[in-house]
Length: 193
Image (cartoon, one colour):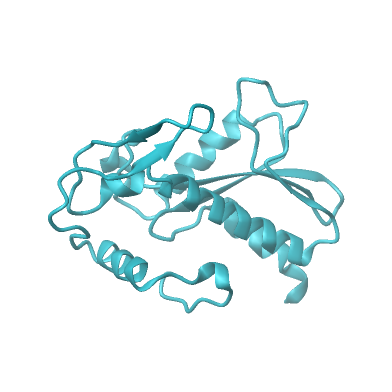
């Protein structure tokens, strides 16, 4: 739930993050007067700093998608870590993050989480946080109905990792979760009912 009160420190946000999120959720402008993106990234190997010089938009779409700002990676890792913690909290088995698997071809990224379910079967989870404003999505086909983009991304993940018992964990950037996450969380907490 978007407006739920935070229950753990990892869910806390700053006043600025809350204001930005609220304005974005309401469809209002997020930025005023910023013409060029100021995000930057440091290359770990060379130490060279790369500056993004893309134009910013008032709605903040570029800021959410800029690969130099780190928001894309931080958002992904926050969801991955939250899900791994949830599994650890209810499971007697170890949970691994960003592990390599011999059965995954070299040209494919490895799933984000692997663990054993309550039946002792090895499962993998690949996390994505998606937005219809990304250039890879035709926005008009995914912005019509909540959950459509998550469902499309789940299908892509299943095809990519068809050789694994994969649970696609997809979050739409405004809060909607895909069926894979919903089913996983229900399964993890089934014994509590």
